[in-house]
Image (cartoon, rainbow, N blue to C red):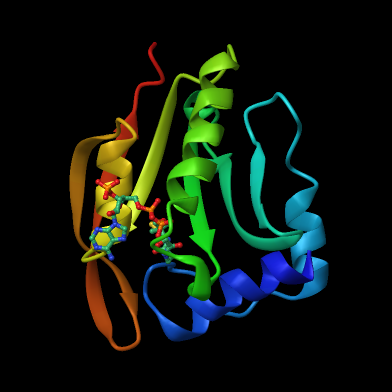
Length: 156
Ligand SMILES: CC(C)(COP(=O)(O)OP(=O)(O)OC[C@H]1O[C@@H](n2cnc3c(N)ncnc32)[C@H](O)[C@@H]1OP(=O)(O)O)[C@@H](O)C(=O)NCCC(=O)NCCS
């Protein structure tokens, strides 16, 4: 859990790839972890290299309004020293394969703050389609940022 916290905190403080603005505490990550199950809508895949946690992919609630329940939001973060080595593709595709098996998940949405060439490429490679653009949809570090919404139909 501390490793997962440190991975996301790096991107919270150093980049706009996540629109989270405040560093996560260990307590926060422990609470976050309770939403995940092994075969439900909300799942967490952790990538390990030689016994060290180097990243994760997760499916999360997409929207609080109940009719959105069969849609999940996906999220992926690797430790900054372990990007560009194929780990993202492995852990994200493992998550997508698990989601395909879950009857009550119909769509997965990935929100990518532009530009993010690695994430754009990864989403497209794994079968996500562009669903739209949130023009200047977020404000972080004194600037508005465009967000591309990717949709995965999960074979459904
Ligand atoms: C985005 C991220 C998950 C991608 O995972 P990764 O392990 O670095 O990517 P992979 O090595 O699996 O590469 C997947 C594909 O993207 C390409 N790619 C990776 N990084 C790239 C980059 N910076 N620019 C262009 N293409 C890139 C790879 O070449 C590969 O395509 P190929 O097989 O056709 O060569 C990872 O870099 C990351 O965690 N980045 C920081 C956090 C982040 O941006 N998260 C996503 C938020 S939406």
